[in-house]
Image (cartoon, rainbow, N blue to C red; front, side, top):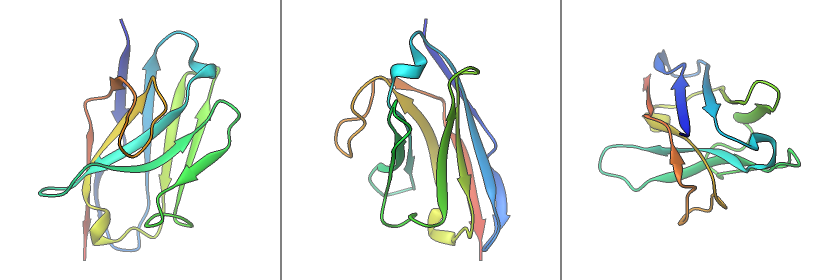
Length: 120
């Protein structure tokens, strides 16, 4: 049974930083594309960042230069370092894997989500 567990969300002031973690219990983790989506109230789900098995990464334009995705294949962990946070980054963040992770086609495995709130 696949399980993804996120942690690290919270409340932070604008300009601050948070680091999200995702612990995965899944086979062949090192071969998977992994990523983070977010969804704010009343808004569509957004692909924030994804990292391929090669460790190359893509980012949404809105977070480029501020967020960094990383992975630890030995520990089956995915991280999202978020710096220079803005109020518009407020959302529930979800770890995702098990597919191509495009903006319209996420992977099949989801975590429970972790709330990030950025105050102005």
